[in-house]
Length: 592
Picture 1 (cartoon, rainbow, N blue to C red):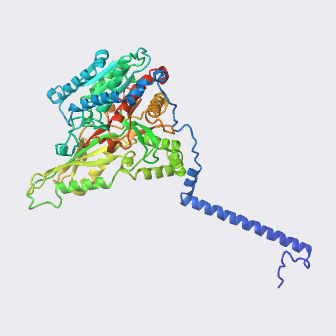
Picture 2: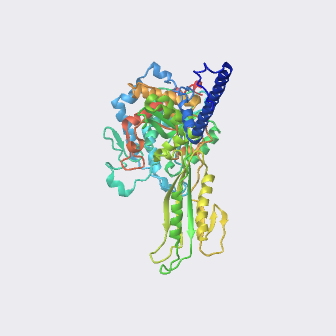
Picture 3: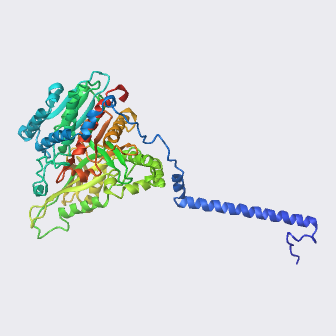
């Protein structure tokens, strides 16, 4: 046998053979390298296809310097401030002014304007609403020049609309709004209040009492703003509307619903520059620790659905395998076991809020997190990661998810009698991307599943969904109260937003946080609850639910709807300072 010699040892082999050998080996090496290269490529492709490596790579290469995302607008101060800032400084810093302003708020709280659900119409039982006569008396006594010089209309008896006509009819009027009413104080909690809920007690820091933070503070600040501007001979080019409903806490049916019709008849559709109502405000972001401003540009929808189950009665000594209470309990379990899935699209202002954090808080958020947030509007993987993070906490989860709360269950009359009728009421706050119809569909499907299991009839929202020959019973599903679609999303760009953001910077950087070493940006958000603005959609595209005062934790600090509801004196004065500066700053065609 003849063996092939080594490359290096070809001295005894003919030159031709050595040359052929080297050529053959070179081809083998090239083929081997090609094969290895292909194998590496295949392995990489396999890794990319079966893992999230490619998705992470896209996030890693996402740029962070897109100036078009959540721009920080310049400070905007009214011309009057630049000439003489004494009035604004007095509002924030003068002790005498503080005590006078707080006294006005305290006296407003002392007038009990409680409303309850399902109160009768004003014209049918006017005495039920008589507390508002006392409140109007307080307002007229406290702010006489406002009522003397502005146009005043009382809508449906107790709704108040004040109008200060501007000299330039080409400028749409601005509308500042709040509600006069407050939620009830539960009698069994009276012992837990530090001060009586309608005393309006001021302890030197906080004003306590029902309505102090929701939202007589806003209403009084609006009235004080008008009073100050009148006293200073301000002559507005842009008209100013102040509108105060009186049953916002009971869905605004008697108040804001009538006010909206009045305003639409008086001014027309899309006739208002912007509406500013109670809502979010200036706060310290929990993630970054940075002071930011937040204005809700949208509201979740609302629907209460009631399901009634009727079954044969009888003596409990001979019960069926499943009573109506047991069957309804199974439906309740099914509903709670199947929550709505969170969803976050570019339509939801919460994505805008998160992107504002990503581009304007520097390294206070990890770079990879910021990049994922910026891709979440169009990248499924990045979106899923952001949704996962937001879904960890109830406060953020329900900003991107339809909530469902089983709030009422009624059934049975006696321990030894089978229940013949059981009712369950479920409250839903509908996510921005969903609708009342979508919730109806899901709810009906769940009831149908239980109806099929127990051979029960089903009528849902006036339609016969399932018929049965059995006498086991039947479900009836319908609305428990008025439903509400998610609100249209107001713009978080353009001149109206720019002025809201610019005046916010001016008030809170020039007057409140004077040593802040970074700019305060304004971010959009979603209002999980509903305000009177639900009736004002036709009046303007620019509706901002914005309470311009600083608090680190509004629910904890202000205790809205709870024992010891309160507002800081500083916070009240910040609202007043903002409205005072804002009304003057937008008094120009440049504001839109």
